Structure formats: structure tokens, C-alpha cells
Amino acid sequence: MEREAIKIHTEFIKLQDLLKFAGAVETGGDAKLIILEGRVQVNGQVCTMRGKKLRPGDVAVLDGELELTVT
Image 1 (cartoon, rainbow, N blue to C red):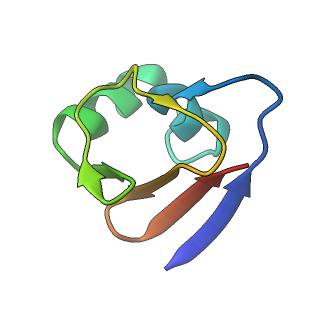
Image 2: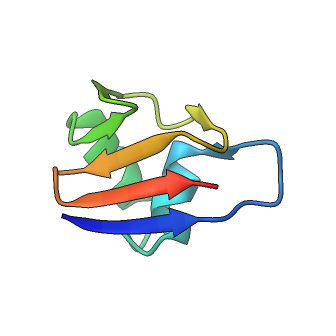
């Protein structure tokens, strides 16, 4: 599994924005589809909320292959 730490300078980042910022998807539309299909887990739970707020310490996993840790 590929792991990447994403450093944010704000209180939180929305899930769809995290996927775009990390380069896991090209557009917000792509992020929306992937999230609604249930392909993303946040802290071990499937998450279908594209506006889910992730804070430092949260972990998002895409398709079990890409792990993004918010720092």
C-alpha cells in the first residue's frame, strides 16, 4: 500500500479536496463519484460524505491502495 502524509495549514480539509490535493483524482467530479461508490474509508469506516472534514491525525484510504494521513 502506498502511503502519503498530507500537511494542511488549516483546521480541516474536506475529503474531496484531500483527494484532489493529493493527486488521487483529477477533478472534483471524479472525487464525488469515487466517494459515493464507497471506495474511500476514513479512519477505518467507509465514508460517502464528500464534505467530510478531516483533521490532523485522520487517515483516508482509497481502494485499499493509497493511504493519505492528514498532518
